[in-house]
Length: 219
Image (cartoon, rainbow, N blue to C red; front, side):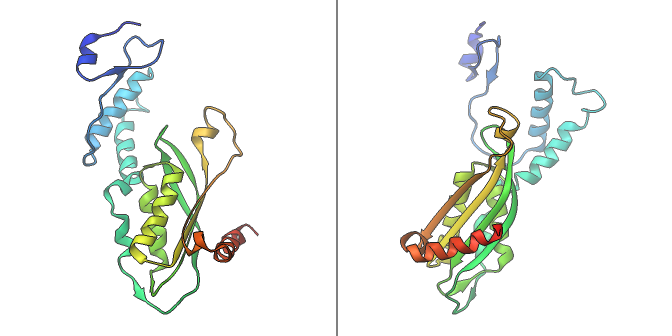
């Protein structure tokens, strides 16, 4: 493999055994969303896979991808806590559950979609929140490069921090195109993750009750 020393000195690494000079840029600090940056990157990607970015079908692809990324990565510019700040004080002390919340996200390992349903529950301690805010909280965490395990915990932790409930549970069921389209190529696998907080983690009876309500969506 031909190694270009100036590229290494400039902060570029080389990957792969067969590529002559595959460059991986050094890590840059996160910044604001840049449509121009995405368009340039998509154009370079098309060239790198051997396509002609100026042909009719691809000419506007960089712009389309930039608009798409602005939408599907909107969670990077959002504050998920904003949806949980407006609460109502109620003496309700039973489980609140919103199940079958559809979501779409992108796996940060291959930038391929994973999607499915999230089930979100909490046991109030004097404060409740509008149901739509639970769905918006899921969206805020889903619309960013993610891994399902982390997203599940982030939603549960946000509920605990901003609603201060007696407990919270988040269960996420998703299919991952990085497993269906490439690699092992298993089309029927579904990944299930859960995060239990407070009373639902500490008390078996409470945990059984909330899981029974969540599993009712499959009956």
